[in-house]
Length: 521
Image (cartoon, rainbow, N blue to C red):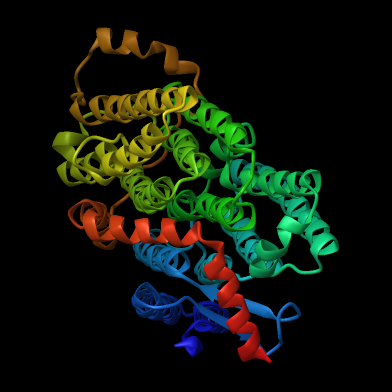
């Protein structure tokens, strides 16, 4: 099974090279991209079954011994996230194929899009299975380089401006991460995560705290944790619909994944949990208040994305096995649901020619299928029972209640308020866009939302376009997966609980590192 692990990264890179060679042949590129991601999904599913029933897998690339070689490490968490990411990437790819067939190369130039998309996938997968910090840094850089291309596709003024901000912020984060790696290597003589976990206790407390805060700062920028989330609401909404969907679903979660590894395995005995709780509180409240103040659907979803990252930081700060398990379940839920909502908004934009809730009217009668495709993930993200959003939040709140400190109680109340305000923002868009009649004059409604008139992109209007069946089918498939997260919540939540238990047992990681070293030698 070890031979399958490197294929998670090499297959997308090979696929990107082949897609670039056939840059003028759309069908070949589409076939290569779909085949590559399908193969990665199959391999990741096999690896998930293997590691869930046995020990994690570690592969030393090139046979170099630790700490000199690159180690690829697949445990339950890495395998689960690669499976979920593969599904999301495949669904968004199908959505983009339908958009490209209808619009040509205006939004997603096929010769550029497919190679960049596969390189993005390779970077995401590499980050999830990296066994050392420098390889994690390489994974971040691979996906960021590809994202620089994808976020500026189309070359419009707004996209170039947003892309510049995104690039500058990403470079600052990468510099901080690289500096942290250099400091850790200088202090411990290794960047292998297993060896770092083993040796970290030998350092003085103030040195550990410095290294810890450096990594937290770098990863918090990537995860869009407040107050380092200022760049996201202006960057994501300007990109093409498929790019925005995959960015919203996956890129910030790579940062959250790095935070999970840092908090549970590198610094399990940290004393920054109170700081994380305060940051989580601010991220939830500020993010959702930003969503309520927006009039454009993509910006509403971008702010809710920020606020719901706060739930994941909340779970990390609780720092119990139950809380870590609930955090991972909520992370999987949010990847799928947030991506689905952005795809549904992409359909709304094509059908209505706008994503401003001040301009949307009569979509319930004109597009009932789109209404359903928006409504289900919207109430799921809002946390209504029995959906997966409610299950994940209940798990987090229950874990916090078990700790029972006053600050935990404050976070529970803040989490409930954030959930209600999320539901309000999304259902307000539903009422205005779907229930309001197209030819009706409703001065009372307009007076209630008049304050949104000065919100960014409140009056934006684009042309209406045909919606290919492939785009609708891809979105419907993602909606079905969001429902499956609820139907099969029991087995998935049990797996996430096992992941939480394993992550807080660093002894197993050290044993795996020793076995890997013996094999490498």
